[in-house]
Length: 273
Ligand SMILES: Nc1ncnc2c1ncn2[C@@H]1O[C@H](COP(=O)(O)OP(=O)(O)OP(=O)(O)O)[C@@H](O)[C@H]1O
Ligand SMILES: [Mg+2]
Image (cartoon, rainbow, N blue to C red; front, side, top):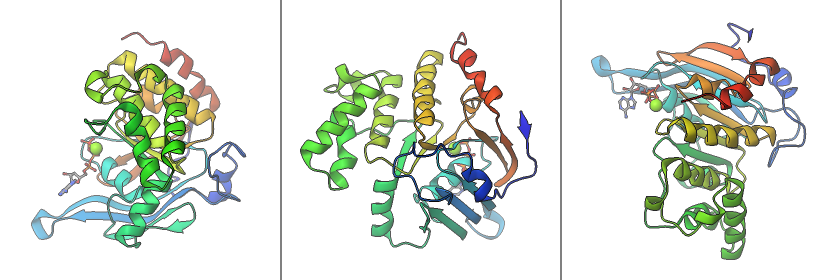
């Protein structure tokens, strides 16, 4: 394992060399990072009840990188992810996505950007219960202005890609946890996002389902999809190109995993459990 500590603020030029050229969807020209946090802070409450959930985080995520975010409960991982994806606003600092500053956009512009450029995957799936798997995947495409036919075609392709072609007409309640999460991943991909942000994507899953999700993420990684995932599971973190760990709202460690480290993934995917 190559350890670059402390190397929190990465130089985009160096990171750019990691990007798999031409592989990513909507890839940015040059070597600008897909995602950049500058002095990012989020505090809740005030005075005695002040909580500094995220404090002065600086981070560049280059195109095509798979980044795992780890750290103890309450250290600010989810808050950071929500700030990076424009689901929450910082109390200080800046967020840049695809070369554009997003933290001071108005609500509507931010919602539009989120829909187009960010794919979210949550621990609890967050699928619409009354919609089928196919409809869940189509929905963000329709909201982004795709025609019903185009949305259907994309959903069909993506459900096949996540191995659920035969479950397209099923409701979430008729699917296993792992299958639901695969629908959620298909939904996250439907608008070809610049970045997929996943918060404990395997947190509710058993080992077999976790393996399925990891295989899928590994495919996304190989296809050049930029991916940031919060995880407690070191088996999940082991598939990343880079692991950052947080402590009390700050970045405490930033580790680049070498190809050799990631080569262990094959073994990890076969773990018993
Ligand atoms: N809406 C809120 N109001 C007040 N404090 C909050 C709020 N949301 C989060 N916090 C606090 O901010 C800190 C970071 O929370 P966050 O959810 O980001 O942690 P986490 O690392 O994702 O934890 P876990 O691993 O348990 O999911 C915690 O101390 C939490 O209590
Ligand atoms: Mg969390």
